[in-house]
View 1 (cartoon, rainbow, N blue to C red):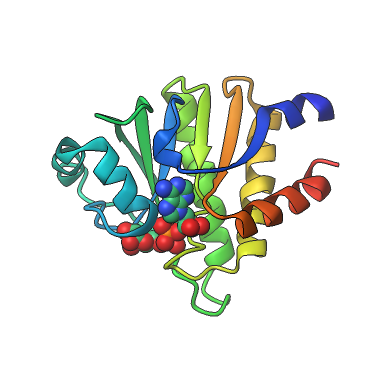
View 2 (cartoon, rainbow, N blue to C red):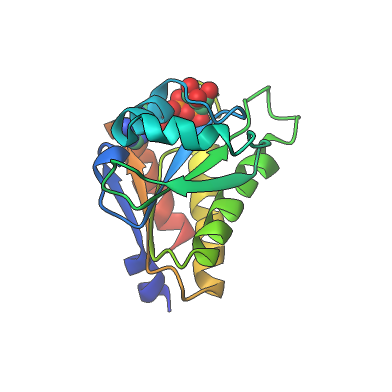
Amino acid sequence: MKTGLRTRIEIIQGDITKLKVDAIVNAANSSLLGGGGVDGAIHRGAGPQLLEYCRRLNGCPTGEAKISPGFNLPAKYVIHTVGPVWRGGNNNEEKLLANCYINSLLIAVENRIRTIAFPAISTGVYGFPLESAANIALTESKKILDDNNMIDKIIFVCFDVYTLRVYEKLIESVLP
Ligand code: AR6
């Protein structure tokens, strides 16, 4: 079982917009109307149709998720989730970040998505401490993979080598 889970979680360094998976997850803001970081890159890759589509989604509360087509991206879908802004740690940030992973994966299951890639949600502009964020990402994903056979693979896409090293270190304790 452990070995099975380990083959269903992959950690790579790269640009999430280049991945040909069923769905990539966007670290969006609650307007869902684009921004910087990975959000900006996803909107650039998908083209203007994504913004047009997102206008009709009426935003998204922190911790929740909404789905759109991938338009010009290699990925078929984009799941937009809104991570918490780090405000020192006493404002429910950990629970809200866990909800991002849980709700994105539940939407994936509902849409029969088998391969899904996540960026390190909230760890850029939103300032969430990386080690704690990566731990939440890995722990929540493991729980859903344990309970569910629909998802074949979750890929954690680390933009820089420092993030990659943190995920690689933590996976050893989450999936020993
Ligand atoms: N592929 C993978 N990861 C990326 C990419 C990419 N192309 N580009 C950046 N990252 P951030 P947040 C990494 O700031 O902290 C936006 O303006 C980045 O290095 O994109 O959740 C939204 O509109 C970092 O590790 O998202 C919101 O307003 C991670 O993605 C706000 O930023 C997340 O960094 C959300 O902030």
